[in-house]
Length: 171
Image 1: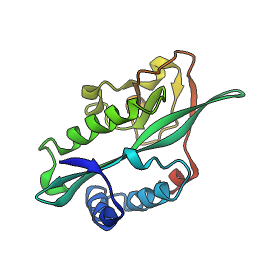
Image 2: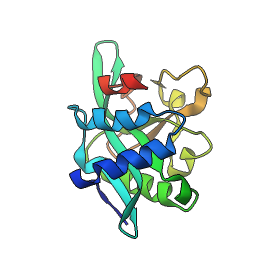
Image 3: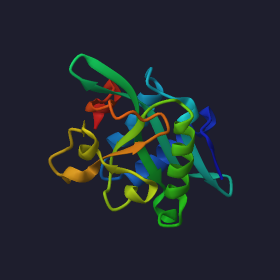
């Protein structure tokens, strides 16, 4: 079952994110920092439940795409986390599909992310560079990890460099 996260879910979400990102423990802090920021979009923070337990989480929040003096409000998907013992069972896919459906209703042009080029294209994400979107990626990441998903309100004029909100400075 996919539903909006509630305050009562926060500790369970932290455990899921910490387990999924055991190699990057700061990602669990990122979730809390986003929640405390003006870029937080509560309706786009979702949990997956199985047997009443939180087994997955996804969060889409606001960011900016900047091109010279022009800035557009866009969305960014980060993080997506699934408890390791239930990975590869469709939980992450269900979270992404529902989050993108809800994101489309916001009027934003696109959802951006840094993620696996082997995983996210199945949902319609594509290489950001092909649409004039620059995402500064970590050195260890492949150049095609910067991806975008076009929403109904997409306009080709929306392009530029992705500027993450301050909460993302932790990762």
